[in-house]
Structures are given as C-alpha cells and as structure tokens.
Length: 418
Image (cartoon, rainbow, N blue to C red; front, side):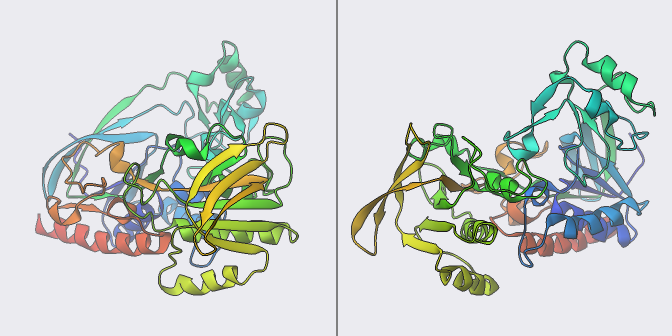
C-alpha cells in the first residue's frame, strides 16, 4: 500500500479540476482519477459555455496550467476507481489504469498520427468524423500527449507508429496497472452522460440522418469540431439555414427521464444564436414544453426571443420523420397557443437530450445512496465522501464550480479530523 495521503478527486471535468486545484494550492496532496485520456470533461466538448459564453479553452487552459505547475497534484488518466474501503481520514482506494501506449517523452509532433494507416470513430466528436488510431483527443488536450487506440490498430499499424516516432515515445509493452492509494477524503465529480436519444422511437435519432443531439450541435459549431465551425448537416454537407430544436427530448417523461435536465433550454437558446450569427439569413424554431432560464439567464432568453429569425412554439413534438428524397426532416407537433397541429420541414433537427448522472454507469467501487432518478443523495453519503455538481442534480457549469469549491473545504476538514 502506498503511503501517499491526501484527497482523491474522481473525475477531471471542470468541477473535479476546481476541487483539485483549490485543495492542492491550500497545500494538500491531491490525486485525480479520470477515465478519459484527457482532462476537461463535458466543458471541453462545448463550443461556448455560460455565463460568459466564452470558448472552453478560455477557462480550461488556466486550470490546466495551475494543475501542471503544482507538485501536489498526481494525475491518472485512462483510469477508474474500482474499490474503496475504510473510513473518513483513512480510505484505501484501488485504481485501474489502462495503457496509453505513449509515454511522457511525447512532444506532440503528430508524426505517429501522420504515419498511422488505421482509423477510428472520433468519440470526442460523437462519431461525426474519424481520427487515426494514434491521435490527440483535441487541440489543447491536457496532458498534451497522444494516445493509441490499440483495438483499432491494423496488422502493420504498430510498426508504422514506432518507425515514425523519433523520441521513443511509443511503447506497446505498456500493461494495465493496479494502483493502491491511501487518502483521507474523496470528492466524486464524475459528471453526466447524454441520454440515449435512440430510445425515443418517435424522434427518429439514428434513423433520420439530419437529426442530431444538442452535444453533437456543440461539436458542429466548434472551430475544432468535425466541420471546423461550419454548421453543416450530416447527410450532404449542406449549410443549415432552417433548423428546429426539440426540447425535453427524454426529460420530464416518466418513460425516460422523469426529471428536468435544467440546462437544455439554455443550450438550445444558445445554439440558436450559433446559427443565427453564422448564417444571418437562417431561421430557427424552438419547440418547447416550458422555457426554463433561471436567475440571471432570463435576460439571455429575452434576447433570443426578440430575434425575428427565431420562433418559439409551445408544444410537445409527437413525431419526426425524414423525406427520403431530400433528407429534410419533418416535424409534427401540436401548437398549444394556436390550438392546431404543425407539420413543418427543416434542414436539420437538434434534440435537447437530457442529462443522466454518471452513477448509472459506475458508483466508483462504493455503496452510494441514490435518489430514484439516479442522482447521489448527498446528505446520506458516508463521512469523508463528497459528491459535486451534476452528480447531485442537473446544474450548469457555474454552479458546479461553486459546489466543487465547497466540497474542497469539506474535504480539508475531513483531513484535519482524521
């Protein structure tokens, strides 16, 4: 058992980074465990995020620098916590670390990717494009180090990467490791997943080529996304000039997600501005049950509502289908205010898919008390374990960061009490 004692942060998204930095800069040892080969979580995949509507690298690069320059931080990527035992002040943690096949000698020169003959679906872009089997997850990824998806390697692929790398950074002898840590407190910040829109048959995700999710829209609009910031529809690369947004795609539905996912209305309003700013002659229509823009975000709603190129229609979408000739998307919905039914055609439809807590995938080797919706029941957690942000309820980035700061203080108190 290692003699390292400190605070364990499970999840390296924005809230996890916040907790780690605050604790490390207060003088405490911190270990970050992240399942992806990079830090940044969902925020890294966004085009812009609230409240300032700035690019993710605006906030993440500062956080990455603070992590990199702090010797109190130990980082484990491609890793997951498989078991936790003990009590507040003395937890034994088992971590499984998967091989990256690229060591710390990597300088990010891209030679391995250029030489690699194999491709893989780009998970960061939700499969809308491909990367080589040797790849950098995104432009400003941290750690700034390539990773190799060995499962996607062809027979001659490994030799091509080895021959191309001048720095001896490729190591196919890396094996899965098991690491044991002793920590005094644990912060769970594993975030959320997007609800599987294919489960809603009437909305035709996965059937109609030009029906996408809200997170896919973020990647399309992003300068480092699959279309370099141009909003083009998947079927034929046509510029999207007539777009529909379907709210509560799975949320507030007892057959799917009973809870409101909180961020969806704001996300669609924001994404309507993406297309209106990119293509001034474009039109956007948002179909909603209720528009929810709490607190200071109400003014943003007013701004979008008053745009003559944006139409807000109260009504739950009943059916989405595809025109087989044009690949246009046909939306059928009841217009509550007008008291009639609408059947309209669009270039593309964006589903505001709901937020699913990551506890549905893993509870990190712990017995975690959950609500009926799968969120962490924070008051019932054992002492020394703290859940933050979207693990407890659907929240935005700003509230996740605030919550993470509070969890840091509680973790330090756990360390003092041990």
